[in-house]
Amino acid sequence: QAQQQFRRLQAAYDRGDRDFLADMTTPEMHAEIGRDLATRGSSQPTDIVTLDAEILEVVREGDRYVATVRFHGTMREDGARDAQPFEEAWNLVKPVDGTSGWLLAGIQQFSQAA
Image (cartoon, rainbow, N blue to C red; front, top):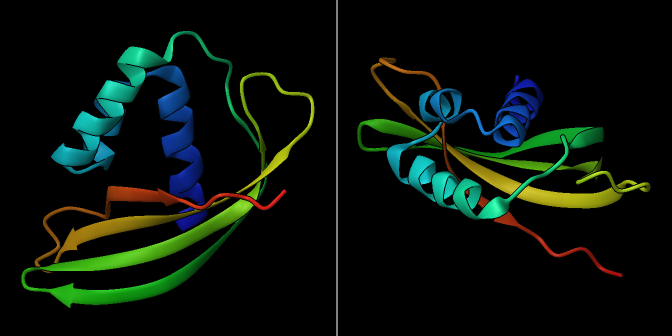
């Protein structure tokens, strides 16, 4: 499910689909993504070549669950010929009472060694 959410959110970002992104992210994360979209210019869809996901942690913080998921794989961005490795951790939140699904709250990208 984490891999599917990654692909759906990446595709929505590529399309600039702010409504879909609003439904899948926290208000703070949506605002940050909106700023990125406003300055991005034109781009080509991202081709996710390989994708692996690993749940690093799930904890309860008050009235919500917080999960950290590590994604890594290879992708081609903006029409690049060769796929490049990537690694990032997503922080997802979900209310304990189940009133919503998992929402993206933050992304930490890791630099790739040359």
